Amino acid sequence: MGRMTVLEDELVLLRPLTLDDSEALLAGEDSEVVRWFEWPRASTIDDVAAAISRWEESWRTGGLVRQFGIFRDRVLAGTVELQALGEDRVNVSYVVFPQYRRGGLARRSVALVLNYAVSVLGARVAVFKMLVGNEPSRAVAVGTGAVHVGQEISEFGGALLVYELRL
Image (tube, rainbow, N blue to C red):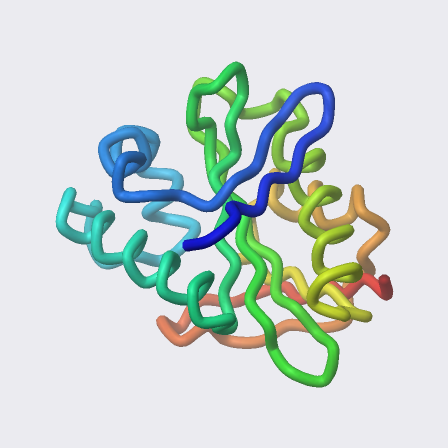
């Protein structure tokens, strides 16, 4: 993978996930993650390993996705992802594991990846999409200064709120 990209502040460290993180990533998934990402079922270890392999490949090849693990005290506490949408836009998504929720980790992690998105990816607009009712996710987006710009239907039929932030 070459030199690993690490982003950090005084509380969190973000770095790309590796296959060594598979078990911790699976352990952090709960029914809320499955619900808010509209997954048809809970993940298996094979699903997680396949996802990490895809993310590693995207990092290696300069692909559209930059997935980071969120680490607190060297323990995986969630993930944050940027996906290039074209036209200097990136989609931002995030998950914080149950025992770390409501502690500001998502907000801090999003701030770090947005700085990366601007400086490394040349992003000028961040897009946040969340299912109607996902108040914690909406609060993170609003906390960045993102504004509600509309609603759309997800690929699975759920109603998504769409927020945008000019970077």
